[in-house]
Length: 494
Image (tube, rainbow, N blue to C red):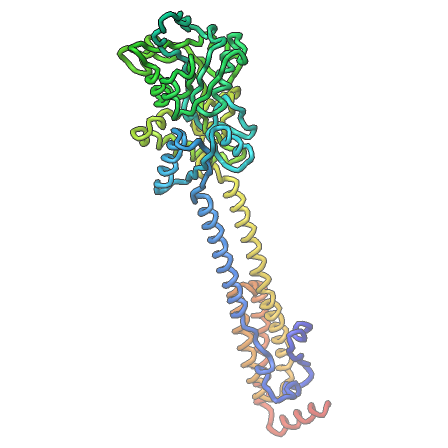
């Protein structure tokens, strides 16, 4: 009965007639509001719809984030260098691909040293650096852009002036002490390279005159005999080196190339360098320059990534890089020289895990990369389903309370019917019972009433119908005057 009070429903006293309970003139049906489950259904439907839309939104957002292109900033320089031109061509090719997942944005620098500093400071994602310079601690190799060789040569001697003795011909590195050595290129890295070679042969760099020329001024400096020996560092097919050697030709003579016979020892002492060879005729023929294979040292320009960048992002970048390089080789032959990084654990520059996964064929698929997110997503959906089920039950709480109140109301009507003195009041009770039945069936359809509770209600309803039928039969069998007297007696509290 407490449930009826909470819902504002009147209590029935089985010893009092129904008309005494309707002091405001309303009928029993009007006095008992029948709660409708429609509002709860609407709320549940809206919440379920909102949950579905939220799940779809989260899945869509996750897919968009996972598949949208990632833009990587790459530091490269100097201006007008082959490295910059290749990177600009790669960036254009990446950006023009319809389904490219990685795009490039070149950041121009003064050279490999400046690029390495930007990477070390965390201002770019990628950089083109020289392997023989100080490598940032957070750098990991993605690819080898190109290999460079050191070329040392002596221009043919000019015709001696009458009365003067011709200087001795230089044929070995050990003869360089006291000579003028011209270094082509503005970077200090080439000067450092020359010092490494001189020190390996026991020559104090302070005992030679090092003259540095910009690449654009190298040909004029060589023609004007600004130095006795020249050093260039670049790819075997470097136009800068070839033009400088061509400028050394005079009076039909050919330059003398100096072999670095201690290349293995240099590589042993300086891991950034490797022993290498310059094939005969690399810099032109008739006569071939050089005439025979020359031993030298080499070093690499690397594409490196900042440590901590997603493995999947670098793996995708590496895959796109090696897929595009062949399409660029006609316009940029240097692009065809791009090689995979050294994935050995003792490599001079450790390979990025993403690049290593591509090289070793262990690149993860979409589901492998996001398996953890998918698993946690399924767990979250399961939790949301449980929460939704609990909330749906919570929303039906009012319906269950109302159904219990309706059942109690029916029991009150059952008690009142057994002592009712008016067939009209019994008809009103019957109408109200029909409304209660309708409401109980609606609650049953929406799960607010269980089978057991509905069975109990059916027993009470059957007893009510029997009580109404028995009471009507008794009232109809009594004389009219006796019915009125009974009603007056009961109204007087007898």
